[in-house]
Image (cartoon, rainbow, N blue to C red; front, side, top):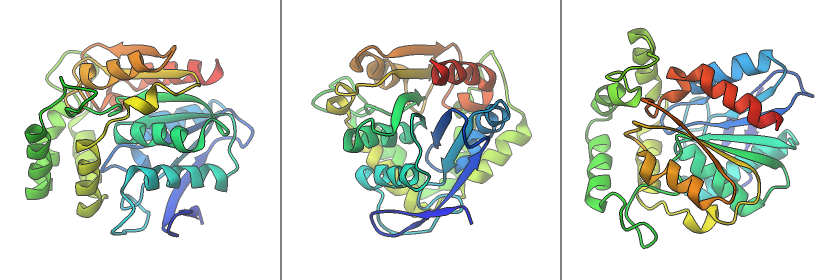
Length: 276
């Protein structure tokens, strides 16, 4: 069965491994709430083109174990490292979305570039949207706390009411269907309430400025101009400015869900980046 165990506490984690075993390797780290299925518009076509596309469900998400602990960034990054070790993956292009981008950055901080050759931050939360000593222009703590409180109070409503902005459906540009939006809102409930709340706390305290400035592999930053979940100026643009030599691609009118609305463009960028 496609499972491996966390090297930290033995949590059983589900993974998928698509495409030829000898193809260029892309490892996808998903957003909060969703599972690996959020990457279907990347993993399936790229695997069909000869890339090896690997992803896993974060603890408390999808088909992985429902656990209470291990939602700190070090443990989450350790789970990612355990997957790379389990499959003995090398020369990896690591692709992280939202909080998954923060996990990918922390993996490099903890483990270096022994297995990872490139890093793509897609609508990433890194270095962190909240106000901190390194980021006085960030979101006020009470704003972040209010978002987390809304999730805890009624997460079904939180997901349903957030979908319009998540996929930037009110803006010009590529659109996804009502049926797809309903499907993805439903998939959000594949994550436990515990996992979702815990990740909200991670975002509230996220400050990866010291980590980003030390990254020494090629980095591609892809971000939507109208990302409400991770505002461009507070996250993506800052990340690109902090990482030496990073490239920033801004998708006009795209929101946080650009992996679906702008799938073709994202695939083109990932394809070129992984082969560089």
